Length: 343
Image 1 (tube, rainbow, N blue to C red):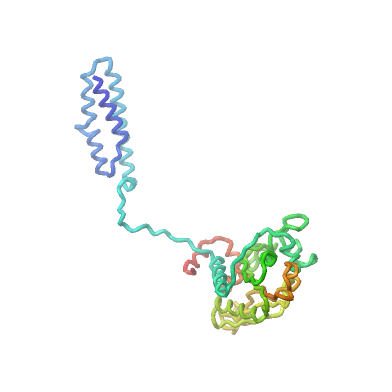
Image 2: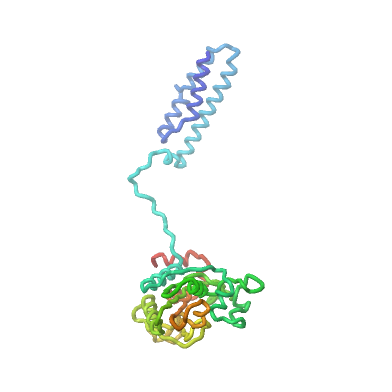
């Protein structure tokens, strides 16, 4: 009598633990436990051999066993209809892998990496610094006096009421940190995000990216600066590009100049990109002001150097003829996917 109960319990565990690997094995499960000559039929037939006082208990066990088998069968059928069999089958290890679409680099990252690569070929090394700066590194050490317009609330995001801490307005602050901590010769470029308190439009944004450069050594001249700018322009925009320098003013360089390149779209003949002038501005530059060197404890009678800077957005817009700065920050995949083949 007890053997019959034990056998029924064992069958119940078999049903619960059954894991057919495919639809054919599911059918074998049905035949074994629910078919016309199934194990359950055999166990139900043992009912008459039991004493009356245990028939009720056995009947309840058999009803549980049958319900469990039927429920398991429905579960297995539903699983294999939804493709679950694939997870239980041994995979074909010789089958080719799935092709997943790759992401793309942001156009600003593409151009930034190109700029870094160009200058690294002539000895410049990348250096970075904090985006939250103090007054000394962002303004004072760079020859920017207290009454300079750049210190106005409309131009700078100040973080404290005394205006001693701010979001940096240029990566020139990293130049100061390098000049304070190292001795020449030094040849660095400084890529990074900067902040200006400006109204967002097609031509302006409150956050953008710069790459600035610094070279200090003995006997560095403006001719060296011109040659570096020419090399960059021709590597970035093409060998036929010409460079011109227009006198300008920056507090931290003297003399200072704006750098223009001949329009690489129209060849200098005049087009919408160059506004019919034949020239396109790409950045500013100049010889490091002796006062800036003195602020950083460098001897301006022994050393000289040049600095330059350009907006990465500006270079990217020119290179890819993008007419709205805001597109770089909207994360529109239709825009970003255009640059998949750009790297």
